[in-house]
Image 1 (cartoon, rainbow, N blue to C red):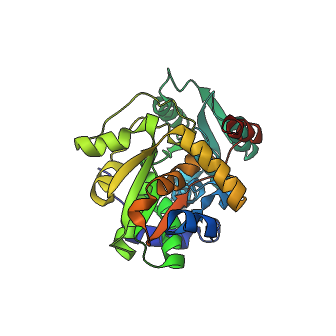
Image 2 (cartoon, rainbow, N blue to C red):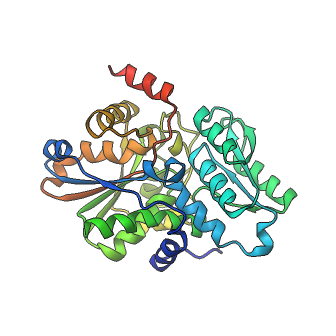
Length: 322
């Protein structure tokens, strides 16, 4: 059985990826602070390489591969951000990458993944099993499978985002983190427990895809159908065998956000902070705004997980709430 990652693994990962991954900014907004009555600190992973936090985990995982494994390359499955991250990290390392992506993945993410030199295999997310497809390819080619979240080196790499945040802010009262498969939230929760033990780590899911909330309530991993949500980075159907126990141990709770709130948050961040954030990346901010009354006068961290959205899609979504 694969061992769960630890805080020490995250510290090691931070050293391992420091020359590859960006140290992204921590943004603040007087308007948001006055509106919420809190002090909000946004860890802007939309400014990370490939436009999302996923580059951290992919880079860390590939860096740990033994030399004999590298020549056969890596295989990943993803709707977009993990795909781009693995493709870019593999290109950095000079190894081949094969990415299994859904046919309805955002065009921008498909194009970017191809642009990094990866081979793309298309599938139907509603009728085919992406993990089975990726596993078959990995076996046929002798490549290493890098899942998007259920991997100790992936989780450790993602946790470096929170490590940087706490180094900038000091202790926080709460930390809002998007939850898809739970890799980012697991890593961030490990960091919070180690460096700011009084911090309440709150996971955030799209309302249509609340498998993590259901899993923690049931005390076991609950699987759901592929959720119909604009938060494509959180269209996962179940937590992993590594992420579930970590979230179970370290998360205070999980809250959900409706798609219309994600669109409103996209508009707010664009208008007030002049940043482009994809729907999944808005999960933490939307939840922090919705639950602000609980945290009046407190220091709140938010992981803004990514900014990869096609501009035509961005404009169309904002047009819905104009």
